[in-house]
Amino acid sequence: MKTLDFVENNQIHLLCNGDEYFPHLEAAIDDAQVEIHLETYIFEYDAVGRRIAEALMRAAGRGVSVYLLLDGFGSQNLSQPIIRNLLNAGVKVLIFRPEFIFSMPRRHRLRRMHRKLTVIDAQTAFIGGINIIDDRHNPEHLLPRFDYAVAIQGPLLARIHKAVKHLWLIVAWAHLKKRWTHRTDIKPSTQPSGQQKAALVIRDNWRHRHDIEHAYLDAINQARSEIIIANAYFLPGRKFSTALKDAARRGVRVELLLQGRIEYFLQHHATQALYENLSKAGVIIYEYNRSYLHAKVAVVDQYWATIGSSNIDPFSLLLAREANVIIEDHRFATQLRTSLKTAIAQESTVVTAASKHIYSWRSYALNWLSFYIVRIMQGLLGYEWRDGTP
Image (tube, rainbow, N blue to C red; front, side, top):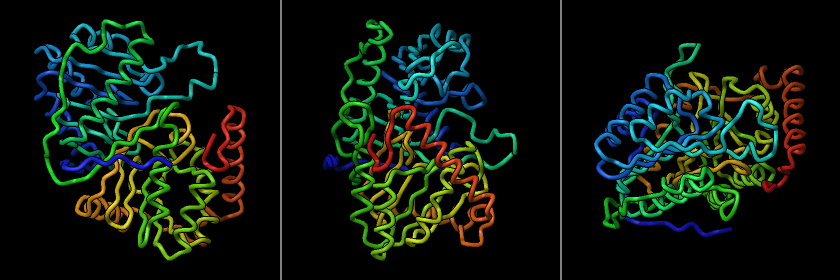
C-alpha cells in the first residue's frame, strides 16, 4: 500500500450541506481574479445551478479563465442551449465521456468522472460530495440531502491544482481542444495558512486505482477506539468488510451510518444483505431516515478524517474518478464526529434483530436476490469484487 503524502500548515473549514457550501462557493467564484476550475458529476440547471452558472459567466466576463468539467452521464440533463450560453459567455466547458442516444452498453461507459472539486486562483479549493444541484428540491419535500464538503487553503493547494489541471488536459486533448489548455501561469502559494495536516487522495484507472480504498483500510486497521463511517452507497468488497469486522472484534466501536431511504432499489437492498454478517461481528448500523444521505465521510479515533466524493462500493472504488481529502487533526475530526453523532442520535434509527424491513423473510429474500443480481451484473461487465480488487 502507498504511504499517504501529507502536507502541513493548511486551513480546512467544514461545510455541512448545500446551505453552507453553495454560498461559500459562489462568493469564491465572484472573488476569483485569474482562474477557476470546477469539476462536478451532476450539474442541474435548477435554482442552485443557475446561481453557479451565472457566477461562472460573470467571472469569465471580467477576464477570469473558467474551466468547467462535467460528467457525460451525471450531467446529461444539462441542455445544449445552456451549455452554449456558458460557452458564449467565455466559460470553457468539456464533457467527460459524453453520452449519446445510441451509445452502446460497453464497459468503459461506467468509468465516470465522479469528483466534486473546485479550485479558485490556485489559492482556495472545495472538495466533497456535493454536486451542483439544489439539495432541497425533491418530490417528498424532505430536508436537504445530508452531505459535506470542505474549503481548503494552504500548501495542499499545489497538489490539488496539479490534479485538476492534469484531468482537464487529458479531456481537452481527447476532445481535440488543444487551444483550451492552460494559458495562465498561476502558481499556488506554499505559505502556511493554518495548522492542519492533510493529503489529497484520488482514484483513477492508472496509477491511483486503489489509493482511496487503501487509505480507508490503513485507518481501519490502525484504529484503537472508534470508527464512524457515513456513506450513501455502501457495498464493500470482502477485504473492506473483513477489516471492519476485525476492528469490531478487537474492541473498536464501529458505527456505520447508511442510506435509510430507497434511492436506487437494487443497490439499497444489496447493501441490506450485508447487515447480518456485519452486525454479528459487532458493527453497529444506523439508517439515516430524515432525508437522503449523500455523505462520503469517516472519522477514526477522533483524529483521522476523510471527506470526498468516493462511496464504498464498486462504482467508486473500481470505476470512477474520485477525489477525497484526508485530514489528521483532532479539532477537525471532533467537529465532523459531533455532526455525525448528532445525525445518528436525532435523524437515524439503529438496525436491530427486530428490524422487520431487514429481517422479515420477504425482505431477507429480496435483499439477497438484489445482492446476487448486482454481483452477476458486475461479473458480466468484467469486474471482480471478492477481495476489493477487479
